Structures are given as structure tokens and as C-alpha cells.
Image (cartoon, rainbow, N blue to C red; front, side, top):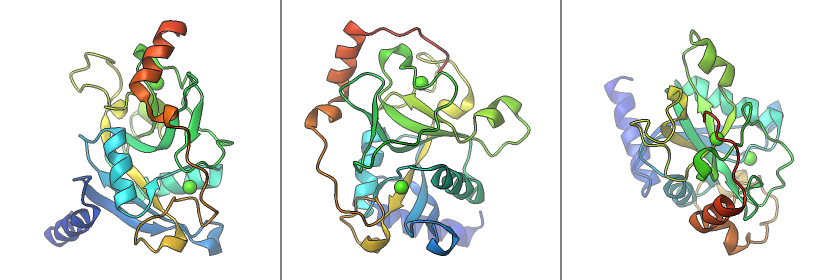
Length: 229
Ligand SMILES: [Ca+2]
Ligand SMILES: [Ca+2]
């Protein structure tokens, strides 16, 4: 990244506002001519933002955390991460757990008919995982990370502590940033729901956003086997 690029990124980050992260790539339009939805996608580097903070920042940017609703969109998101040179880590995107342990929903209300979970995920490791992240690495030489690249992991809203005290695991589980999707009909000016111009879905019940309460409830009644991530 040269100095001019850094300046551009810094200026773009200023537009993001609340998030405090640096826009690494974006907006990248998923062109309708190539089968896309016309929406714009951004990669924001921020290794400190919780899923909630990233969600707020994405909405402040005029969109929402990206929803990945098809294999084609999954592939596009991966191409954006790859083109951006996104560093190894987890990137928040637009799914969160509902009041039902292990059942996830898109933030936009779009049906969750496509998923791309990594093996054994979502596993609610440590009984504290309630939101989704895309595992990523630019390192094609690490076979373990490469096999997981692009797949989804359920993670704690605050991310994993980097000292490994909660989940000692691969480098791609730690927070690196988040993915924004801005609907084509919003023009990046705000208020979008990121669903590609479809009517706004009815708001989800407030209960689905009460992660700590949901996690506590789930922890009492439903303890899963603890697995690696
Ligand atoms: Ca989407
Ligand atoms: Ca997990």
C-alpha cells in the first residue's frame, strides 16, 4: 500500500464514521451484467470492532453487514477479499443467531437458504458464539487455513480474546474486519437494508438481538460438545 493509497483509505474510513476501521476495498459493485445483484461491497479492516459495532458502522455507511445468500455471492465476496489483499482473520458479516440456539438469520430479513459453514460449525464453542464471520487468509501456502478459507464460523459478538484464553485456535479466527453490502438502490447514501432493492423486511423480534440473554438461556438448556473453534 503506497502513501497515496493510505490517504485514500483514510479518507474513505472517515466516511465510514462510527466504525473507525480502514476501508480496504470498496465499494466494489457486483455487476448485474456478470450475474450480480448490483450491490456494492466493502472490506473494512478493524481488528477491534465487535460484531455489534461493525453492524452499526455498516448501517452508518448506508448499508448493512453483507448478507451472503447464494454460492455466487459467496464467490463474489471471496473475490473481493482476495482482490483487496485482506489479511488473515475473521470478517464479520450479516448473520446472527436467533433466540433458538444454533439457528441463524440474516440481518436484512432475507431467508437463510444458503450457508457456507466450516466443518462442525456453527458449534457454539464455549457456549458464547452468536454471530457469523468469514474465515480468511491470503496465504495459499498454509493448507489448514486454505481449506477453511471463505467458510463461516460462529463467534462471540466481541470476538475471541487474542491471548487465546477462550479459544486457542488458528490465526483466521481472530477479528480482522468486516464486510459491508450497500444496496444498489441506496446509492451509498444511507438507509439501505442491503438486500438488493427488495422491499424492506419486517424488523426481526427484539429477542434475536439480545445475545447475552440468548446465550445464557442456551447455556442452561443446551450445552454442545466444545470443539476447536
Ligand atoms: Ca447480499
Ligand atoms: Ca464456532
